[in-house]
Amino acid sequence: MGFRGSIRNRRARRRIDSSFELQLTSMMDVLVIILVFLLKSYSTSQNNFSSVKGIQIPYSKSELNPPDSLHLVITPEAMTFESERILDFNTTADLNTSKEEVTYAFKKGDLDERGFRIMPLFDALVKAKDKSELLRAKSQARDDKGAPLPFDGILAIQADKRISYDTLRKVMYTAGAAGYRVFRLLAMKREVM
Image (cartoon, rainbow, N blue to C red; front, side):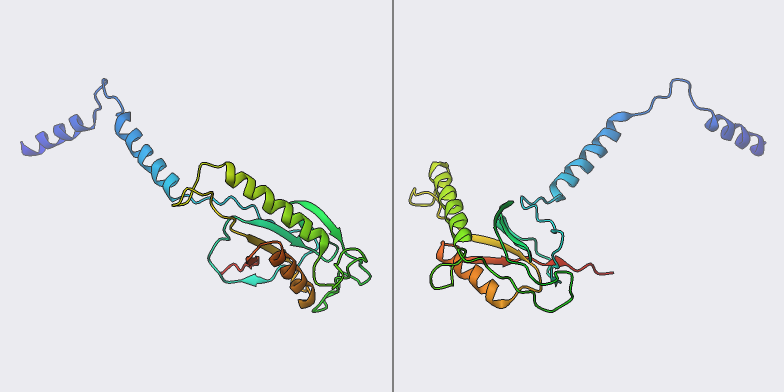
């Protein structure tokens, strides 16, 4: 007799009541928690650094993302600051070569009288600094004394890995003369397999 009762009980348990409804409230709670978790763990960066055609970027193992800064791109053909082409180099060499160093020849009016400062770059950097200081003066963000926040002077430099030291030194000297004190040399993140 016990055997018959257990079969009936199993059959009764298998039947689903016709008034059965799916409880969506608990499912929605789970989805909201997952959404909040994903939004909290998602990190964003205001920088949009992308590789430029014809440029070989060095590799790095650093895990840090570059902070927000102004962006200077130096290719063997030209120099671009904040997506605006500011000067062209005299290119005479084959740029597709695998030489360790590519020459960046400046045009006659690009350097100052001593040959250290790149004038189109200096003008663009000073203009960007003045604009940033004007925006900071109008901003509601203030320091402890109530003064506008100071200019941070961060410049991200994305250059070809074959750039000569002399050219990079002139770029950094020019940026320093314009009031930029922190330089970030951008590199490609090496993917670990």
